Length: 625
Image 1 (cartoon, rainbow, N blue to C red):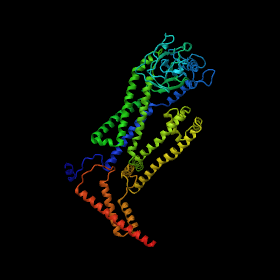
Image 2: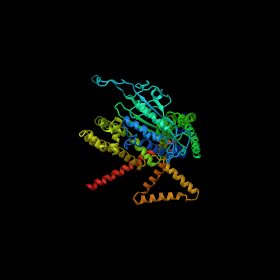
Image 3: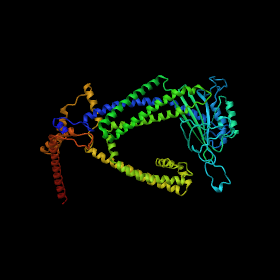
Image 4: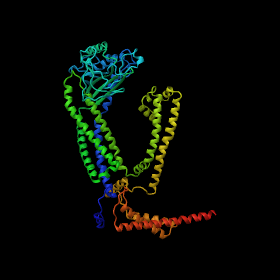
């Protein structure tokens, strides 16, 4: 009743999700301008975190430690080693030569900085490298009874429950004794298994000759056993020229099948954040980012308090919440990384005779970079919220919303066939073709086949009968039938939406038109453009009336059409909204009367058009007869 009385007094009820056209456009422009400032600030911040020198530093280090061949065998390097013998050759050859640089290329002494090595003369080796291995116990798997006479030992794949923690070998130095893992250190996800920290560890010496003797001693005393499942080689570098740390991890996995699988990680990170003047600009962007985050959080909290459950019905609001959560996670990661660097960096650099575990810092810093990358991705996606009021973007969003049910139904059918083919490929070719070695690889291999990247020769060689049948039928059903059906669904819906827009069934809310109008008004105020006169509009209307007279319409029809047009424009301007609401709003008696009369006039016009069509059809029938 209170709301109804406000209507009769000429007031208006408090809007929920319903804004007037001008107010909504003005609010959207303000939000867009503010958001562009936020986005520019975020771009400066993120691009300030990365450096082209990171790629080049990783490239030269990977070239030195991965591509350098073993002496006497140009085809064997760390990437290609597949046996324990080749592994020791790498340790005593390319690794040793790559780690120890103590003289210029003319064999003159280059420097004397606490007897540290400078790799490529520019990168200081921080502390000393560390080598550690993880083993599994014997009898962790069961040998079939018929083969127990041939094989009494059995070493399963690595798991934390199968890990061997007992001392072995000489049992004198640390490399023969088990070291408990550090709870704060992250686990390593390799090709064969997931490995925790700890194990049998030894650090290298500052002296190249002592390190080589260490390697020879370990090789002669069989430090690598049948139970060995992985060996890590960790060391860290710092390049003061570009203020970058390079944390390197070389991994050699020994699967239960025998042989060796190598992998590597090169992390170039900027742990010392604020050194140059440009870094302080980045620091100011970080402060600005936090201010924006507080402002946006306050705005969203107000919207949730105002709209309550209706707030969560909009996809854009969910995107807004996701973006805020990612921003808070990024800020938390940044604070955590800076605190850890402040606490650990001095201790890591204090003792140059020990291993400096920068891998922990680099690991979390890489996660921080990933979070920032995802954040800026969704920040760019959010721009569609503001430009969706444009005609083209509105057509796109309307098309996707209309065909959503059809696409969901199609997706169910598509993935049933797709996963059936993936399982077929995995079972038939998985043991011989790398692309189908696991079920996950088979899924991605089929996506690559759709894009034209496939290994037909490998499939055919794995199975000469089922290989071609699988390939031809997959291409036919998935590529030619299903994908074209998917495009047909979107095409058909887009045609319907475009037809609706062409006859006027579209939201009368064009952000581009508002910007254009504001631009023209600004030019007129600056006297750079002549203002448009009302006489021009009248002249245009007069031309339309004159054209209607030439086409045979009488004066009553012309005046009725102009009256209806003026009435329609007035009512649309008064009642039209850019969003169709489901909730009912109270109207006054006067407004109801106007709407009723408008509906009556529309009924008359439709009746008049129907009579005209009947008259035309009768004339066509008479002419045919």
